[in-house]
Length: 135
Length: 141
Image: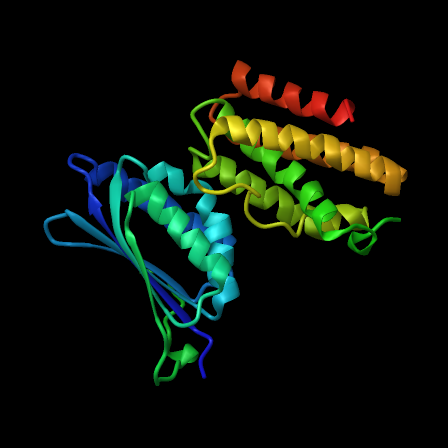
């Protein structure tokens, strides 16, 4: 079975916050890239109308997601006022600590955002097929 | 020379919390928590350098810490009280179990705090006050 963990969260962009959010997110991506060498991928998407932001990251295992929550968690407060977190979805088998960290992030940025976990049923991961260069 | 195995799990967490809490205390002093990525990056880089270059085994092991030791929703007041408490407890533990390491720990904590303060766009009175509180806590154990 794969230990890979996929994390996805979706937020509503607060009115008038899009440009500042986009700048801050670029800084966050640079920060994560520099300080989390085990992370396989970390990507941020915006809807066409700029009202929704989705972040997707893929980790080799639960420890990597724990590490992300510890290291990048230090700057999550930067996004209070810029987004309202709607949901956190985790695919795989996260540790109890990750679940606690995710619920805390949901309280910080979403005041009640749902945290859900879906277990792996079947599949595979081809790490060499993942691009390692930046867009 | 003392190493991680010489301390209980709780003692070790307190030693690390004193280090990361000091960084967070300086960061919260002005705009609030790690408001700039520079401050958070400074902590991470300082710890990374210490892991590789510190001459003290204890400091190299302490620098393995990740995160801040505080929750995402912890208040600034809780950071201050939790950090100063951890620093006093950490120094007291070192004085009892590894007195030769007290000075290295004090120096490590102060260097971390000053590197975070220096990463801010300007080091103001509030950051200096925070560093003063850290220094005082390290000396009152």
